[in-house]
Length: 153
Image 1 (cartoon, rainbow, N blue to C red):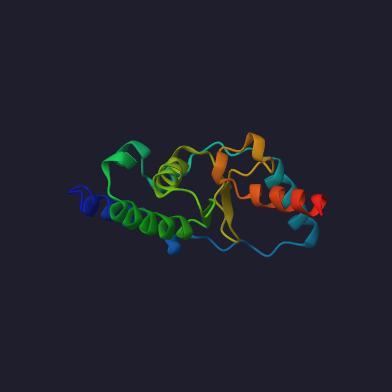
Image 2: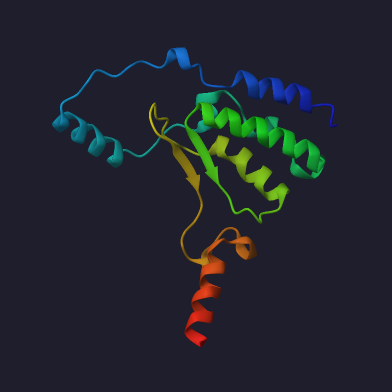
């Protein structure tokens, strides 16, 4: 195990959202609910996830410095911490661990909204495999191949 991993896991554990700090929103009328939703949908997030949770991507070792076991430990702890913030990350299952680790840690640099109900997800899917950041690991390639096979039949 990389000597920095135990310290990193402690930092991640401290970065969990304090559920006691969540304030209950007053009950709104249906009109007020829709106004709040429209306002929320039109706002562009201005704050990074790292700002909310207190972690910095620069504090994490590069994937090349870690074993697969170390990356797995960090990713499991990090995803639990994200869950406490009502956040998730959507990555292809076939994505190599080193890329999944790098992209997950990079969420700390991404601007996002933090919600009290439901979930927000970091989703990099454009729906177009040709322009996909995942290249050959793009989940949409399967559907393109299936579509092509159906049209050839």
